[in-house]
Image (cartoon, rainbow, N blue to C red):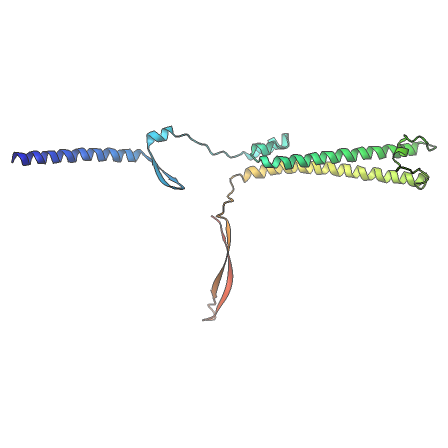
Length: 227
């Protein structure tokens, strides 16, 4: 009888100890944090959670991006981390700058020649005179059709390169403005979903006409899936 009593006491003690352990486990699990990961669900304890590094999600500020792009061309793209756009932007700006410089130099040459030929009462025979320097090799003013015709040619050339220079300036301003717009749009759409979940599926389907019973027709269905 004493043995049976001792056995019962031992069983009760074991059950009490097991109950305390299970309660402790439950309390620890309650303090745990459940995180849903792409590979499955993970449970991270509170103590481990305190030691985990935190990674803040970074998103560019559209207003700041616009101001940076307006101050220095390309700085908005650098702020948005779109570094691959820099060669395109600076290549376009360098091309525009070269076009402005070249057309302006040609305009100044023809403008000077046109002004000199109007001011000279008699044509100079100096080959370094502006309107003589603009002649094609082996040509003279007389062989170009005379003074009146050559004056008209110089005026037309002057106006042409003046127009090209102004057009190059307009294009440069447009490229600069486009870089600002690109920086703003890129910052706004920084977290836009472009994953494969955006898909267009083409599949056949059977169409049933309710008004005319037993009438079926084969069709092609376009399904746009956006998630």
